[in-house]
Length: 426
Ligand SMILES: *Cc1c(COP(=O)(O)O)cnc(C)c1O
Image 1 (cartoon, rainbow, N blue to C red):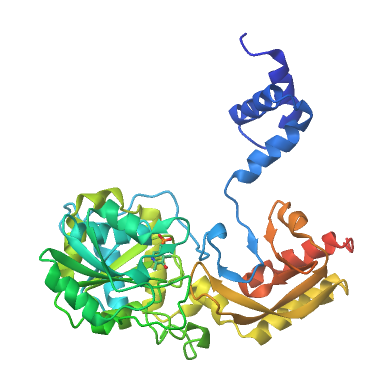
Image 2 (image 1 turned 90 degrees about the horizontal axis):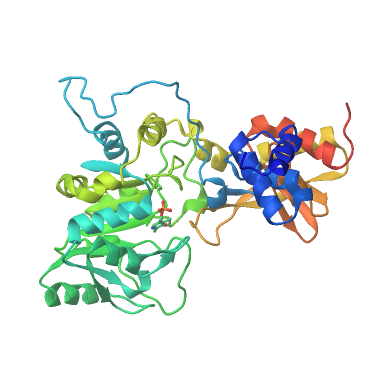
């Protein structure tokens, strides 16, 4: 036996406390022995357990929280084969992009569409396919970093497109792009990048998609946020006021963009994906590029995105959890908070809050919301449960915003709060 007996003994002693496969517990035991902290074996095992993916209750009021997987999505699938790349008409090999691409094209008014793993991958693929080995023009005001290290200049370099910088950080005019066109024989694309997570104010000037589209070079617009249509036909009421000014796929295409690129898990409210929609010849160019194979999603993602897209086309915004949460009237949230307070007691109070879209979209925009307040910072305790609740703290009070909580979780939240404040009636 080459394993020191103490590892076995330690594994046996923590096995009843934490449910993890034997080799993981062995690794935990070896780690704490090597680091001379055997007394922390159970804690270490619990820490490992808590690193695994698990559902959480998002009570932060941040609708698209990158740390919590952005949009909430349901995935229901029994073990089964699918027609992922089988053409059921001919029995021959088909394309995994055809079904979902067709739906997305109709949903945003494009000739064609396709899906890759995320928006960063979509930008990379579109630039490589359309402008690889040639040049692409971008305003200096849009050479930005969006989210964890996604930098437009770096992505362009990876795509093999040569970056032609246009204008200045605060002011870029159509003439700057015209000059880029006449100065660069190999200019293959104009690139427009939405300033998703920041604003430039003051002495500024920028070129709109419709102005850029008046030039002859094809325009690739990275709108990031994934709003499908500015008029939100999938909602019962008018578009929410907090969406004003956010670029939408349909309107960007109508304004003349050759391709629009957006995330599947931001305002689209679906699974993590990147969507490329627009001119059929350019989408085909993307689909043919060798990178498309490396960036293609699997059937789980495509199936989930198909469910979301069908809901849009049927105008069932309520069936898209993100939109159901985003569009809930604040009175309904207040009623839910009042009911939770009734069950928990006066240690919690009903408060008006401000939710935000999040996910690096709509900076500075808030959405009227409601929730509960408890004295003190209880974040760690709320996270420590089997079903973690993620809350916010402002000035020594813990806030639970109900806009991002599924109403089906209200009872759980009430029970958890009752336990937290020691008012747990059996
Ligand atoms: C969020 C965003 C991206 C990156 O999207 P991912 O889906 O996270 O890869 C790219 N461009 C813009 C404009 C964005 O807002």
